[in-house]
Image (cartoon, rainbow, N blue to C red; front, top):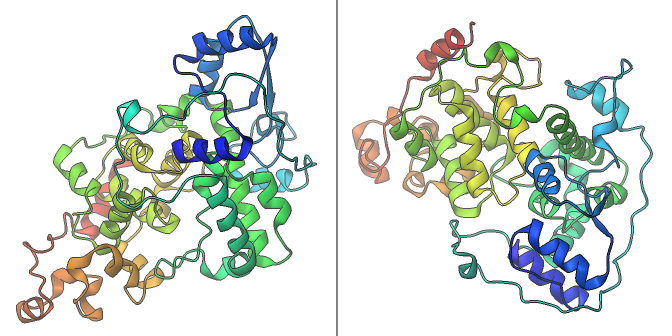
Length: 397
């Protein structure tokens, strides 16, 4: 966020910056300028709505910007209800009118401020190799994506090794790139159409969190609220967080998160399934860990995706459809092992035939690869087949 603000500060010739609580500083700033209205980008998240409620005495005017369509909360079924299933929402969404893409606003002649450093806020960077923030970096990535990536999105979006995804999510989250503008730039073709569908998923989860704000803390599906016996095993959770589960694809995903503050979407699904289904740990723990480290951490989308993979959200699919086998997923989406080898260095010399299940290596092969199971790399935390059966029982409520 600070990198985004610094980039914007340079582009606009100086941002107006105040330090303090919004309910104190915004009215003061309005008094300095003689403003009677506060214009802002509308946000449907429970946190943002509560923040706005604390700011009394001024008129607030929300503008679209976080979503492709202007009013995600106003999209209704034929019965006048909010959507809880994606496909019919998408069919409605795709035909809605779109706003024009606008240029930059004029600068304000008012006392400026200084963008703080991370240390000034009492914070430090927790990931070692994050993406660079800011509109400048976001536009470079967007331009490259439109020229060299989106046409083949249908074929490449799930392949972990090549990582031919857009990586625009953080720039969309911080407003460096507008989702409406991204859609405007999309050419024709199967790849762009599939990418447009992903933009719709963002709008869908914003729609859901607005209409069902309790989703921020509890399961959408009422039958699972307080009925699933979740595990709260701290040591098991910490092994998952650190990428020490003994399942190479899970560990690669979690270590990518630790290194970059980002994770490939296919890996997000695999690690989420492993936490909630194989380990039986409460999905809220995973959601909080992701929000702590993900640069693109968005309350609506993070919550929606975690409830989706935990089989407790708006998605109507039964739990057994969301129990992912990490070994089979690696075979399908990281066939050459390049993703795992990139993020789990202790497995780099393991032969291909053992990479998906390194615990099957004979001792002499472990010695040759310099990877002793149990010391250099952990034994698997669970037996996936047994964990799957336990998960099916857990959801039978």
